[in-house]
Image (cartoon, rainbow, N blue to C red; front, side):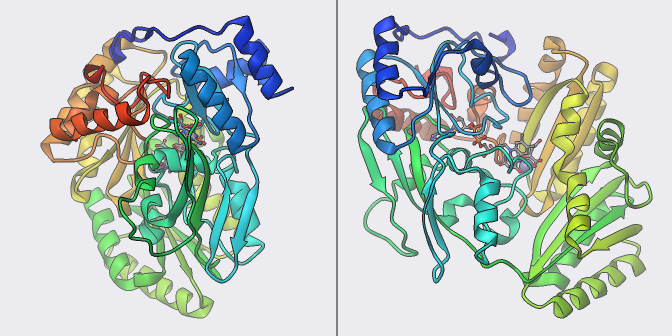
Length: 476
Ligand code: FAD
Ligand code: MLT
Ligand code: ZN
């Protein structure tokens, strides 16, 4: 594997035997996949940066099947890689060696929806966009929205504690996930699938699984609190001439839009260039150094539009914003959101991606991009920044024509040292996976990391669940 991410050694797990395969085929007839073509895509991550060599993909349909798989694997000491939509960005979603891939793709049933409370209970393999559509038909929405919604699974979202485009308004999955069911490494089913707003009966164990990246258990079902579908949605796409002005616009916007603000996202001019070049998207406003996507979601269209327009007037007249356009109609809203959501896709066309997902005091977030650009000079093809201003979260991305270990050595640990200097997080929302696990110390004290190690040993003593991920090598 990639020496720059540490030389990972295969741990002494068993290898799959003919007898193992027979067991799986009997348990999951037609759903034990060994076809190399089908395995190819499950072994490769979304940005095509890491690749495993698993020879078996299992597609259970029920919690009971997951339980039987894990009990067997634990006894046999076979390593397992839980996988949802495989849109993860830190190399956590694919095997490193020959781990068995346990996919939630066929665990895609809604179990219940309560119209009064807005609580949805579903299996972990439901695709986020399908859940959104299901809820919209019933007058509700999911509390999270990501560019990967067409592929990612809700179980994967919970396993990574995904943030996304609506976190500013509805909070993180740590608040909206009310209950969860997980299967532990030994096959035990932990049913914490309550659908209650309030429950202070002892430690909140579900929180351990939220953001655990498949290392503590396989999440099989969740219950989640969903907001009402807003009657009125507006999206504004604005240009700013400096990052300072963008920050001032953010402050002004928060003050003037208040409770109807549902997203405040940004991209820089270099991101826009990639959208134009590779995806042929057309910049809807005049060229600017920075762009903002603002979304409002409220219950009264006239009231919201009035608020948005008076904010825009203020922002334009005080020259915080240089140009802008507003959409209220669905197709135009989608087109404006594409300018933000499709950046990861455009980046993939630009070559090999080095991705960083950093949270910092918001006024610092773009300085990281500028400093990195200066630090790398012409060693990088492109250095771009975009992200979730409202959450103080920047996505710094560096591209190069091909994988370039010397470039990586110039980026890391520079980027992590920079982040630690301002007490930021080296992984705001993507997790640590394979790529960032050995940098956890930049954001967590040794005492915290040691407790994480103890929790892992307690819940997965044989270490079969997503080995080589999340926890640093030094804990082994
Ligand atoms: P996978 O990629 O399959 O897995 C991710 C991790 O979760 C792995 O470690 C895996 O082992 C584990 N896992 C998956 N399912 C389970 C389960 N049922 N039980 C236990 N562990 C499991 N992330 C954000 O936070 N915010 C964004 O705005 C965002 N936008 C994105 C946009 C694009 C275009 C892409 C490609 C990715 C984006 N991501 C974003 C990253 C990614 O989509 C999220 O991390 C997502 O939540 C992963 O879900 P998934 O089902 O694809 O999980
Ligand atoms: C985003 O906000 O677009 C996602 O987190 C994906 C990325 O960082 O590229
Ligand atoms: Zn993001």
